[in-house]
Image (cartoon, rainbow, N blue to C red):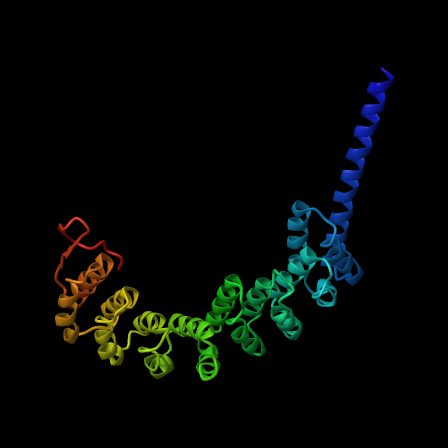
Length: 299
């Protein structure tokens, strides 16, 4: 009986502590929403010690707190606690705090910080042009995830990123050149045409053909037709794919020749693009040798 009472008392104490923590968090949230910076600072501090579940709730509270958390967040961009650092940078991105851009850019360049992809994401969310150079430099990061987030963020800048991206092509590595071309293709600005055409015979021509298709500019048609006879099948596939979005009757004969390509996916994309250009159904020879219609990907 005595042991039972002890266990019951212990359970009540634990429950009371949990309720107190919930109550404290609710109180801090209410105070921060009312403009209390000290409450905002405490909320941000908790990012370093709270459990993942509590941190999820904390993050929502911080985002809802507005001005009361801005200074505390700025103070902790370079926190020694990785979890806190990640949440802080993400919150600054969500809140679009322009003053955070220089320090977040420094974090993005710090290869010792494994979660620096969050910095790339945040710079895209904030949308301040000052973040573009750091994002372009991150296109040569050794970590693919960082390069991917940097590319996506640059695309968010849309036309504002086109000139800096084109300028960066003059000194970029092969790896970053490929990422720049992907970003230019996704943005789809006509200013990118000539820079992309300069890469249709280089080591990143595969990316260049794909990007040219996204530009939908018929001035690229001749280069894409030449790409149909490239030695690499991925390049031939991308050339065939791109012609479907910008090709004219000039592309019909070369695409018919590509229906005999040794690689099935090239034959399939040639048939698909030829159907789009001519307005008539075109079949291709599948892996079993049967003539079939390509799966429709255009809607």
